Length: 225
Image (cartoon, rainbow, N blue to C red; front, side, top):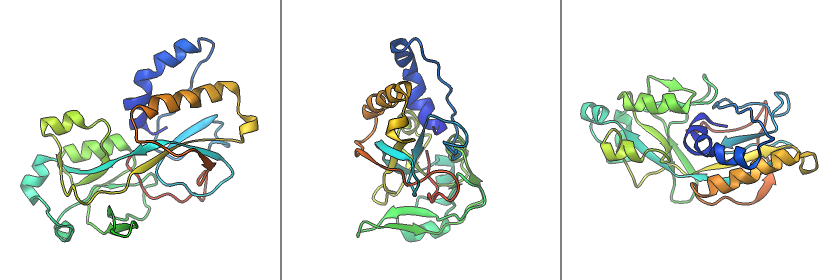
């Protein structure tokens, strides 16, 4: 699962799950890299962002609301953008799970409900959510990321919300696994626990669906996890 989601929401609550199931042991990979569930031998994976197409099953756990932020040092040097047009004078810290891919720019939800990308310059691209946040705190540019876990940074003024009327769309969060008939009881127990834990912290999700994305050839826009 993505490293930031694991650190903020899952790991702090794992002791309760392990106490309920003393016979289980967990191997948890925390990475923003898109793993191949089948080839790499995972029972299930948690992904943040849009899904492409594959034969896996996806269950939606919830969604992350995103906000736009920059550090006081960055804004002191470059000014506070008040319109989307002014973003042409600013720097965006780019995020991509695969370095070298296309950078779409500043993302907003248009009036018609479609996602619109505003190309922006940027001197840095990262592929890890913790590095993404650290780069913003260091004054390297503007970021768009989930507001989960940012309360203290915002309250202290380490990050400033900008362009609040122009937010990126929420990021869906799914747990992915193989066919239901092949799902081991231990995996079922963990997935049900994820629903309970993340349901308290995230906006509601939407039932079961076929997975839209797994392995090579998956289509997913860069996301801030």
